[in-house]
Length: 414
Image (cartoon, rainbow, N blue to C red; front, side, top):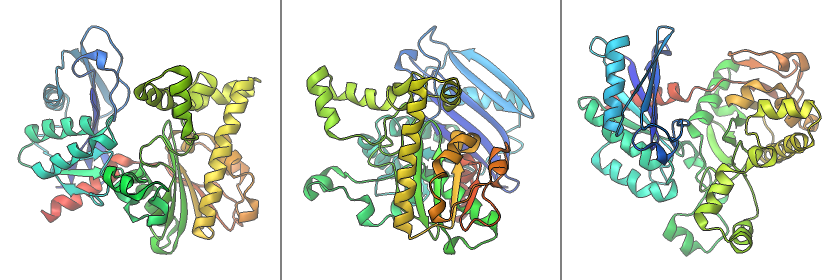
């Protein structure tokens, strides 16, 4: 059997997919949200909640092309998993007839302790909890999901797949911040990088699609969604990435600022009288494209830009300027590139972002075919010209499938 249940859990919600790894088919998927007190807000790792209100949770289940939604009290993650199991029993596929052979869990922060998918034990749970200070918005919710899932599925292996693991191959020069080394070591301050599951999946899919050995390719993967990151990959290994100690660093994102002068926090504290938590919320939830335009969705920004909106036009240029800067830096770090891949919501769907970000890279051998770039498809595809020295791809990401693959590998080794 090759069926794996994948869980992506936040503090007040969790997503799930039941995946047959052999066929790469998602047999079912769902979202359980507004777990517990709705005043706690949205889930931190599994998509937005629906805000404060009646205290009623919402569960959505999709299978066989149909979708069902229930509203009912969901006081905690254990209750949420009971609701999920009831949805499988009522709407299928039956977990009794086709039980998962393992459960895979997305965990955002693995620190420097976890560099590969890891069988979850009580000690691993303790380590995930201890690393919560590096990801206070993500790891606690993941741990709640792990505990509830292990109670619901006590007889199968549970595997943690860490967003940070893929980036553990970065050299010290790439992950070290220029601060006092004793302070850095004491508080584990370094660049960790995120979106690693997506970057791994996309780089491997690109090599497979091109029929070339992964080990011989120099790649830049651009994961552009509401959260966004760029990674330089040499021979299948991450050698540099844009996100840092937290997912705030790097590219301009939907609501996150990306790179700013670190002294900005001091200025905001002094001039606005904001607390550290207020500054953190400002940079993570009120900045980026939202802060520049009032809208976080690139589709809205492109439409407003086309209609002559000056704020949207400037925000788009800021977004592209930062993106080009990282691509250029990684061209230098890699000593050239063979493949540039776009993925995630913006990367897969915005022809304008793709064309604009690569428009100045002709000197590096990047030639985009305008007609190919305009094609909309859910399939992996080439958008560069036939004579382009650098191949440019659009590669739909599938983090859940990657988690399922890694989970199954660990389960088979148990």
